[in-house]
Length: 248
Image 1: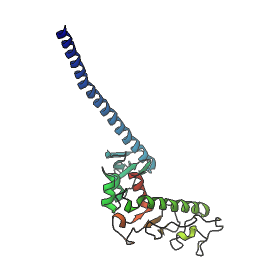
Image 2: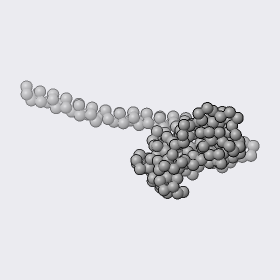
Image 3: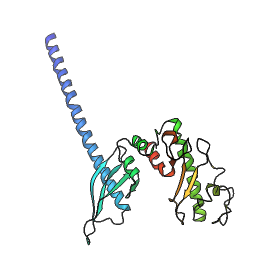
Image 4: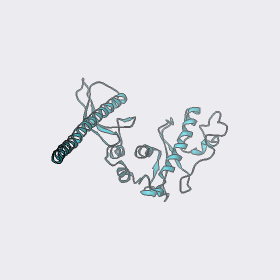
């Protein structure tokens, strides 16, 4: 009886062991199928997002489309001219809810990377993002605050302060043209934030029309000099998309 019980126990143990081998196989297979489906879906979504910002949606070809960690999709597209023939392929980047049909060299290096934080440091000298001495979270918060005030200013007057007027135009009516017709009571900020090293943030506006994206807010870092890396890195409003991507 004991031998029979022992044999039954061994058989039960074998079944459990076999099931233990079989179950992970199916789990891995299923997980792989789900992952492949998700990757295909994201790539297709990225194609649709890019098409939505292109001047033409038909006769567009894609190649070398790759998905990176975080859901960023990079590749190349070609808008075929059916009358004149093919054209050159151009790079594109899709991240989050953004699609860029003309990515910069920095966009390609940072977004199209398996380690975007390392790429940010290598390409722009900015980082590590979480290092307290680099003060990147505070810089991002300060620049966002100034951007919000600039956007409110532009809504009221349909133009942005000029480079000469500077950010002081957000606190009180500028004496230099173009002057706002009716300045908001209390201004657009109670005071201008300074960077973590006690210096005013710098501001430049390009173009005569003062289009919203044609401005730059920046700090020159701890050393106050152009260039540098780590805490000395120059960080500007155009770099916020990288910080948001790496550390939402």
